[in-house]
Image (cartoon, rainbow, N blue to C red; front, side, top):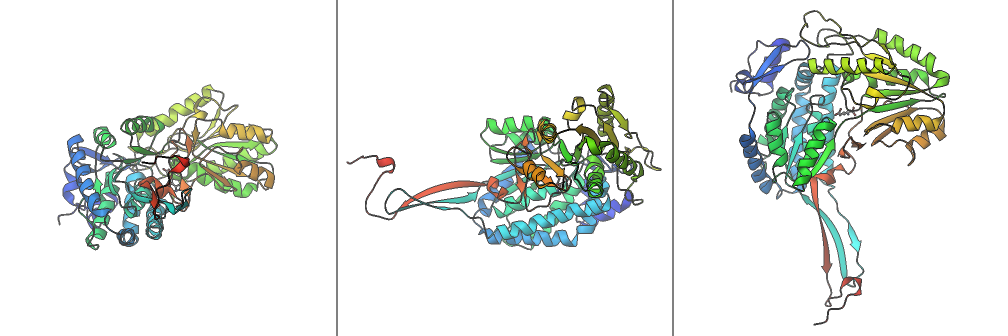
Length: 508
Ligand code: UN1
């Protein structure tokens, strides 16, 4: 096979070659791929148009018709093999995630680990796709429900978790008997190509895998729109902005498909008077500055009790001033680059609005990194806000942490819940009443509510997703698999009479 060239930065060519990505897929296309580490072009890929996208869906649909016949534990075997390929390629794929998405090495590797974890979870699940049996009001009858494969699952993923979020969806969908068509972010096509190449390695070792089971669509809005509109895609999982989700959700609903939406977050942590401040400081640092503030679960609002506010903010300011920003592949920086210029501009505009609304901004300026003039590195920003207004109620995908003060607990809860988004949240307290209230029906309104830890960095065993403008979808663990299947309810008469439900008589 002719693989990628070797003359790209950070051995990108060698990594792609090792991961079986053909050079033809990354060398001559019309669309430039840049590394946010340096801003330089590292590949050229072709985009599929609407017709080509529909053709990929068609192949996936044909594959689905075969795949749904394969027993679920056999389907699990394919996912097990894929997990093996991921384990073997963890270093290479993790490094490619760093090159293409700008993550620090441990987060690049962590992203691949998250894929491995969901594969393990799905393998077990492949023997546990259970329904119910239900007692019937009719004599000599029983009822049951079964879960059947749904069809082709469309996955639209974002740049910030360019492969893990696809894997959450794909690993479950595959054991559920579905085919998958993936449209990754236009900013991260290389990791998608590499992931599919690894999947194909696993598929080649599994004789029941039909061709086209995991389709890949590199493309822009046109391709995305074709995937979203296609009636052969009963389930469409989309991760990204609320604006994108509004368009996608509507289009899927229009044709009565099912959308799994994982959209914007505006996650808060409450720091109570009894909090272990040392622990809170460490948790806040990772949650707010990690991944350069570009996680859906990034901590964006800190709600601190007035009695500890000034002292805690002072400690936080010194943590912010000391954090290393830089090219994570050239040193040991903890904060890498923003994804692109648009992200930088969005950040600066939010900071400007914050100042206008009376906010006091610390940090947030562009940070020069030698040899990376076309990249966008920033100092993380800490913004003291007089109230929750302006940019504070919006999600800006950058490392900005707004700090608010509270007096009584109800006020803290009202602030926590007083934004349109509802993904993740957390509380730092040693007071059992406060933590239990926070987790109760009248507490946090988010899909994720943590105690004595930050809002980010969820593991795969739990259901992931959130309420309100976050879109309501759940992915990954718990019983999220049900969204990838169709439910069939059956009533079975094993007697000789024909009683009707609700006492209806119809004697012929
Ligand atoms: C996302 O940012 O889209 O909980 C997903 C976390 C990660 C996943 C984030 N496990 O932060």
